[in-house]
Image 1 (cartoon, rainbow, N blue to C red):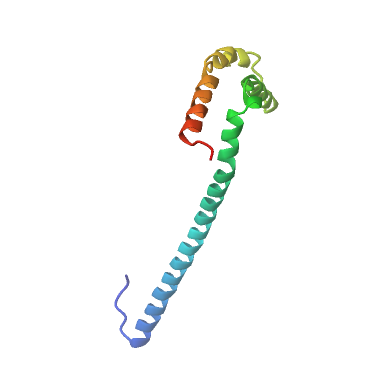
Image 2: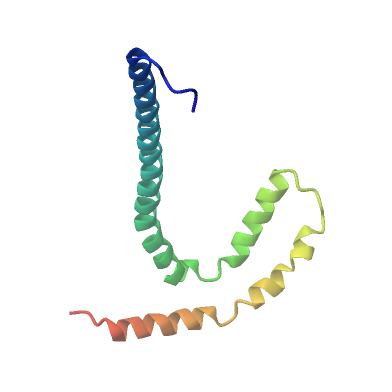
Length: 122
């Protein structure tokens, strides 16, 4: 801090300045909390809607076997964004990636059956 105020007026002025600084800090803190709180609220609400839909899409028939479509779409986006390597698909080894997912549908079917047994419909 600076030198000690010598008059009562200087002490009052210094107290008012300290109070203004504290008010500004409080206002910044509140604004930060509103922004952070809003972002967290958005993430929570988005998660509440998207997670169940994503889970359902993963366990339904139309989504099975679409991995090649996802790879194809990803390559299309990469090429559209300026990727010009003609060997990109070969370098990614899409066939090996698809083969590596063998058995996942059976795993999902087993999990679904376990969930049905654990939580029977009433």
